[in-house]
Every structure is written in structure tokens, then in C-alpha cells.
Length: 316
Image (cartoon, rainbow, N blue to C red; front, side, top):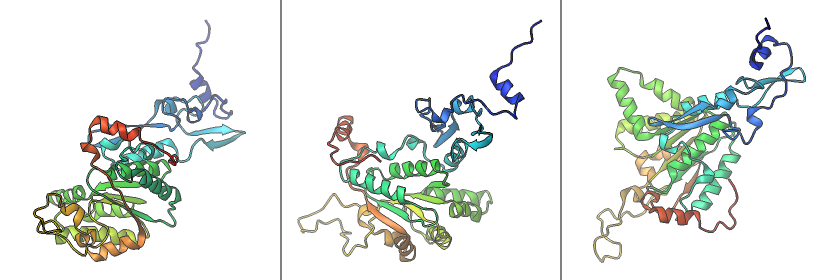
């Protein structure tokens, strides 16, 4: 009776001392199912979920181990390994809505979006963990601040940098829930302090009670003392105001104004205290994103934005 034939995978595992034949790495095939990045992203519940792509798991060169023999030496196929990136993205707690966010897919060009994407991209390319510089992105509702933060978080994770994305209001709710379950507040805050890059969406949101400001102060001071930066978005002004029309009366005295918006009129410094704001000024670049609320645009208007002239625009 003939001996049953064995699969190639079984043959290779039976001969670990031999060099693995060059059968083509899944990460080198730009036309592979995942475009060679080695993982896939998809919404799962409220968060973005990453998983190792099947083409990597079934790779004939390494069978998902991200290591193969080259000239008798075991070498890593990709650094960081796709499995590492998967872990970083899943730990980042990115909102599910932004699982597809990318800098080169930003599409709100009703204001200065094109220039801001370029500035944010240059900031990302220049970023160094040993000499970190934070980023504070301001602007009205709906211009794309959260989208840009999510895109940056994915880019950093792909480079092996640990990231944590948190809506500040949701963080406060999580801390309050921890009290009810008799959990230690310090544990959650330490996670936010120790991560390489902390991203805070909606900075300044909330009632600004003494407790809320204390939480923010602990986060900012903890990271400041460790030379770790914060990347944040806010609806509030980055410059202290010299005059605020708090009575909803137009400045020319002609009558009531319907355009007054506390979110865009109040100073962030007033919301988060001068102590916290001062440290952000020292450690961060400030960028203001202008434009219309993209969520309120019609599909036709959104399509027109994508067809707008792109003269002088460089890929990001």
C-alpha cells in the first residue's frame, strides 16, 4: 500500500532544521486580500476590531509566525508584526464608526481641511517617542476632528506605538461606574498615563466640576511628568477671549443673534483651568480646523467636495 501523502505544511513542520523554501510572503504581495498589511479592521459593537488576516495565518512561508529562514538565519518578516498591530489597535478602543478612517480619505474641504490634513500628516511623520510633541485640534462640531484623531491612532498603532483613544465624557462615566463597582480609580487612570500616546476626544466637555477637573489634572500632570504627550480635539477656542457676547445680543446692537454658540465662543483655558492649559501650550502644537458641519451636507454636496480642485495637494 502506498504511503499517504502529507501536506506541505506537515512536511515543513517535520523538518524544522531545513530552510523554509521561498514560497512568497503574504506581506510582500501587494495584491493580497489585505493589501499586504496583514490584518483587517471591522466594526464590532461600539469599537473597531482588528484581526489577523487569513492570508497571513495561511502564509506558505511562515504559517503566521512572521519569521522565516533566510540564508540559514531566522528573520522577522515585518516589524512590528501584524499580530502586534492587531493587539495595539484592539487596545486603543477606537470608535467603530471610524474603523475606516485614514488621513488620505478625509473629505470635508468646506473650509481649510486640505491644508490641515497636510499639517497633521507632517506632524505625524515628524513625531518621535523620545522627543514627543502633542497636538491639540480645535474646531466647530462636524468638521472632522474625531475622524483625524482616529486616523492618527491607527497610523501610530501600525508603527508599533501604543495608543489609547478616549472620549473625555465617557472616561468620566467609566470612573463613576467603577465607584459603583468598588473599583480603584487609579488603575484606569494609570492605563491612560502610561500608554505611549493618549488621545482625548471632546476635551473640555462636561460640567467642569471640581472632581472632573481633578481627573483631567491627574491625567495631564501624570503624562507631563513622564514626558508623554496628549493628542486631543476640542470644540472650544484655543485663545482666551477678550469679549464674549453672553446675552445673545448682536455686537452691532441691532437685535438678537441666533448664531451664538458657547462651544465655539468660550475659551478652552477657562474650561480646563490655566494650570492644565499651560502644560498643553508647552507640549503641544495647536491647529484650528474650519469648515461646515459635514454631517449636515447632502450626498450631492459631499460628492462635490471630493471633486473639488486639488492643485498643489500632496499625498499623505
